[in-house]
Image (cartoon, rainbow, N blue to C red; front, top):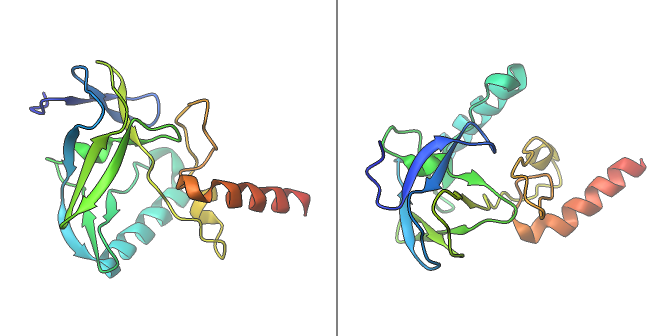
Length: 170
């Protein structure tokens, strides 16, 4: 059982596991830190590449990766048993946001959350137009009314829609 004040990990309809509110949580609360081993960007990229290759060969058993970009030089490998934040799922209509400050990654509420609600944030993946798999392989399953189908930063949604339309017209 989770020892966190606000959250617990349970089965999720979005993706295998998720993080859920154990109690009502008001907007503006720092609920958990995303923890793990600080690794170089090169090591993070290597792990991401390996994970993507595994996904391509066995998509049903793809659990995801827990690499979190800390800054231009460092990543955090959150694949540790004590990191319940690694189970927070993406949503196109999130109730939390990530706050990266002073070498730490925090998850903060941006809306009032009710007991039993799943905790989510927008993963903020960038749109790499040279290699479209960056978003086409990152399908979103959040189920929200605002879902755009991919785990992209909201700023990239208009360009993503243009690229998909252009691709479908070719």
